[in-house]
Length: 219
Image (cartoon, rainbow, N blue to C red; front, side):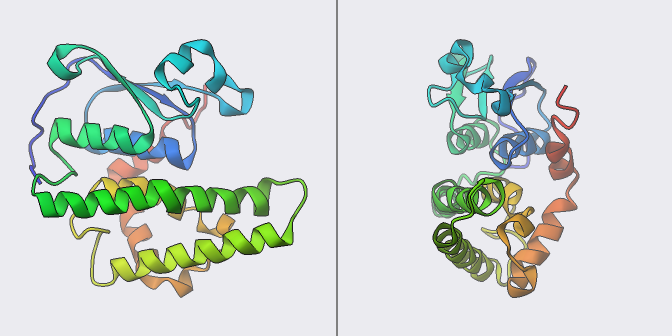
C-alpha cells in the first residue's frame, strides 16, 4: 500500500450521511485519508432519503453517497453504495487499498463479505431483536445464529493478525461500525476474543474516533 496519496484534494468531497454503521464506513475512511469533506445529513428517520434531489445521487435511496467534485478527468462524479465508495476512494488516493493484485483481491473478498453478509445479517438481528414492535422468536433465533456464525468467521480470520487482511484497509473500516455495537446483536465478545481485541485496536485509532463522531450533533 502506498503511504502517499496519488491525488490531493483541494475541493471538499460531499458526503451524504446519517449516523448508522453504513454511514460511518465512509466518514471513517475520509477521516483516515485526511481529505477535506463536507457532511450533508440525510435524516432517514424523517424520510429525507426519498427526496428527489437525493435520488439523483443515490438511486437506491440509501446512505451513504458521495459527490467528488474532482472526479475522473477533473469532472464531478457521484457514487452510491458504501463498498463502491470505499473502493473508489482507495483507488483514487492509493491508500488503505493494496496495489498488489493478490492483496487487493483479499481486501475485496472481506469488503464484499461485509457488505453482503456481516452488515445485512446484523442489521436484521438489530431489527427483530431491538426495533421490531412484535418480537418473533423464529426471526430472532434465525438472525442471531447467523450473526454468531459471521462473528466466528471474523474471529478465525483475525487470529494472529492486527487487522482483517493483515495491513489496515477498507475492509476494517467497513466492518467496525457494525462490530462495535455487538451488544445490540446479543454477542458476547468473550466468545470471540480476536474480534474483541481488534475492536479495541480499531476504536483507539484517532481517524476512527473522528469518523464515528461525524454528525454527532445531527444539526
